[in-house]
Image (cartoon, rainbow, N blue to C red):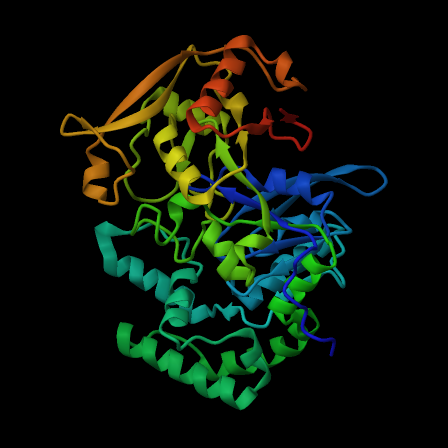
Length: 437
């Protein structure tokens, strides 16, 4: 085995791509564009509860092919880019292989370029059963989980009873720990139908199929950076779903912020270069929780229909509302974006006027921060700035200067409010519908 890499003083710095709102911002498209110049695309947190859709031209006939990514890094669409699933990700092995098999059947060869950290925790089917039972237990307070078992898997991890990828290769230890885990869930939720011994046997077979993909995650990522390879870190979910800084408890169970990049990959802050925040030109969220700028009128329906606001992972209709710059400023403070990608600007094409949230009032006083208390958040009075719409089709526009003046002013208003440059602007669903600003 090669020596452990020295802490890098030179080498390359990772480019990080993060969701800046409540998810579904369209991170996959920019990940696709950026990965064309990358050697490694890494996932650092979450599991197969993420959802990125990418459409690429495949084969000599350039056939448009749609790929849905949930667990695997979407940078795999670039044939020369390796995919890496870091230690902070929770891995449902059957879903890993199902997703991989689907990609391969569509002509995307991932042989020899997909790797999993041996420290990543495992999601089991009983975690998914428990996920549903927890939602039933919560009743009217349901948080809108994807029921992929992500929360229960992270709970196992935090309680130090979880199983990691490397445990698969000590079959006796794995079997004993697995039985204890399942028994613990039976005690907590009552006995549910589950073939414990059958699962142990199934994972013994999975272990051999998984073996070629497994690496020491810390050595892998540091070797890549030290050798000057270009690394893209693809965030899952978004800042407002972060376990610590999101609208808790209506959040996911992992760190979706810039901090999760360090803890999920085992790299220091000094190994991070550009941090790109992806933001929709309006706001959406899936599931429960307060949503200050939510629109429940015809404009909200317009955004849903024109923006095709249905979840890739769940198929659920997304709630829609005006762009919330209070949320985005909070997001910028925590993640320190060096630039932004504004997506789905074309969804606003036919609106006569567009509102942007610029502050919250609580009991008549302006809040100086994003409230931690959801009872406060649910009752805020949103202060809006109203801007004129452009009422024209921008889907075929290829440069910033070609955008209608009122459209450019909308983009510039956001930049000035956040004091962060918008470097990319999405004006349509296609891969090519991205303006470099």
